[in-house]
Image 1 (cartoon, rainbow, N blue to C red):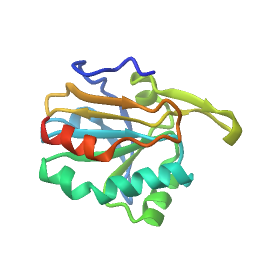
Image 2: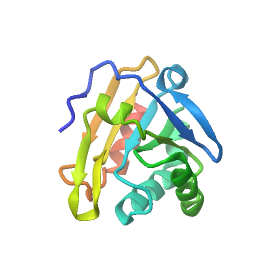
Image 3: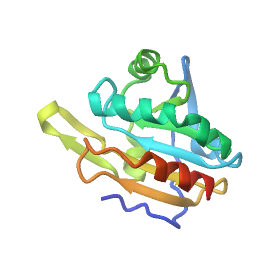
Image 4: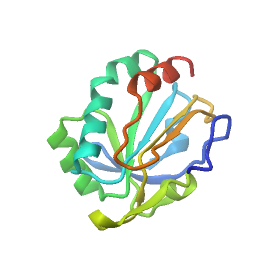
Length: 159
């Protein structure tokens, strides 16, 4: 399980942003404008990950009402994530963590041998307040388990 827990200063990282284009991303630059939701997932185009990202999209208005910014994070390439984003009609940005900086910093790496996914992220959600403190952390016992979305919305509203 993740070693990053509630009350910790969130580890910062740099990666690639898949937002329809491809840009550099720094968590430091995303902080300061309200809560940040980092939703780590094992792999684009897999059914549980598609379900989770679509569910986050369905709750996006509630997150945005609290001033939160949502990011999906995986080890997939930015090219794959942009295609996944288009296919699932997602309006929030995805972060390509191919160098595993975020996955390693948040200690959420797993192997899913039956799918041939090695060194990917487990399904996990971290909610950071605007100062970069972890105010909510959750990691799946197994990667097919999804978070409780109402609990995430509640955590964002109290961040």
